[in-house]
Image (cartoon, rainbow, N blue to C red; front, side):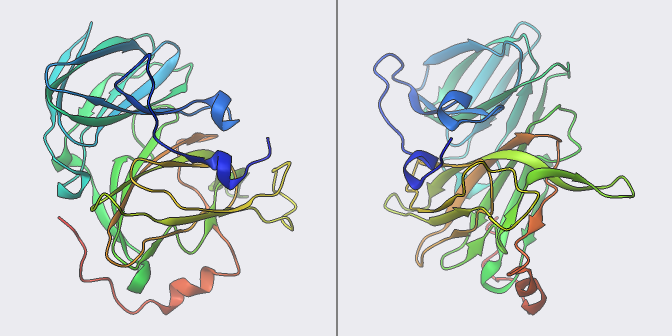
Length: 295
């Protein structure tokens, strides 16, 4: 598949057959193997039912409050934040072959992601108070990380991360990639081959960000059939596909950029490598941005 700015930037749209659906990504649209992703909304009292099939599944509240009922268990009071800028999300994990119904206790939006699996894991809910948060980078590359479903979680492939990039700052920087599975001589994983979705929200509705996705044509290990070099302008509710390559983000002055990362691929890992031309920047940081943490 030839990736361009036009087909890697996914805008929210109206789905007459499914009015609660805001944005829909699947392997057929993305041209990849694993990740399906949807952003959805429900008014208070409305429900949405589905099943996981042969996939592991994750639910993340963007806003609102929800109950999720399965044949094994019912979880209530999932969520409660009015926007993603108030605190970490809840994340609910469901295994394959699970039927479920989501009911909105309060109106809002949520994200769901699923990937195929041949493993069985127990369902679980992680509340915000148990989500690890940290500050990554330095100077104007400082950003806040909420590790919703980090490497080492009791799942097969899914990794979920929330990232907050303050006004004027950069994130996913220095540019890094995770598109080749590389194991070192000592058995340690140097890089994973991962698909990735960036789902964007902003602290003001007119906000936007810039994201570049580019491959290194000179890398002998790079498996991209076609080179990629695209700059995209995601607005509120948009998603960016990262099938290959480096993928830095810039947050314009005046706006805090939020994105939910969904990753899956050759390992339940975030092993990556920087673009060697820019990695030196990490050695120049002198401080952390004092606007962080946001909460």
